[in-house]
Amino acid sequence: MGQANQPAIVLVRPQLGENIGKAARAMLNFGLTELRLVTPRDGWPNPDAGPAAAGADIVLERARVFATTAEAVADCAHVYATTVRKRGVTKPVVRPDEAAQAIHEEPGKSAILFGPERSGLETEDVALARSVLTVPINPEFGSLNLAQAVILCAYEWSKQTGLVQPTADEANLPPAPQEQLDALIAHLESMLEPKGYFLPDARADSTRRTLRTVLTKPGWNHLEIRTLRGVLSSLQRPPRG
Image 1 (cartoon, helix red, strand yellow):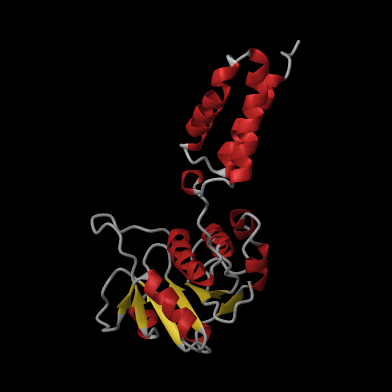
Image 2 (cartoon, one colour):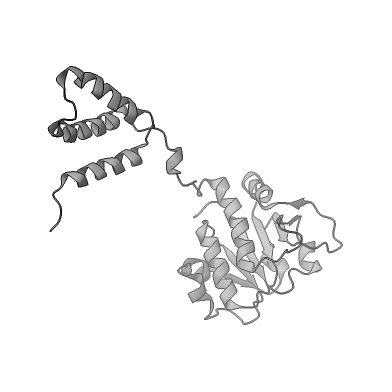
């Protein structure tokens, strides 16, 4: 969590401590810890922030408070203002993924500005930014709450770091190694043998080959093989009670 290119998340005039806590939680979910607050309405620290942060205490403890937005971003070379409205300021417009890539590639400190819950950033705040960051959402319902906006930007930033790893989809795992398949087949054969499944002896080899073909065709992965072995083991145990 100490990446040199970690952007500062700047909440400009946030209104509710609960929302600050939720934003902190969203940040830490994706490895961001630098929170800056510009004149929070109810002061700081705020007792409502802790419970909403759900354990993201490190973010709240390190939060710094500034009197103006300009002071909050004074050390930043790259400032992104999140807004969905045009405020008469002509600036490059980027998506969260584009901003995340730029933050990782460009030298210098970066900051992402988020406005108050009800009104968003003022024109004066946006004027401090070099780029406008806009989330491409439903134009007929463009309402994002503060934590949602923060988590979208934090997620895109974390993808660039490799922190976010796609969860392995069991159906897309590669087939299990041959030795695991052989062990499954041997396990099943050991259960079938006492039941006379491979009789008569003259057809035993052919029956075994057919069984192997049937079990090989699905291309089971290691998790599926393990599940099938568990099923066979359960069938081997005597009934309970």
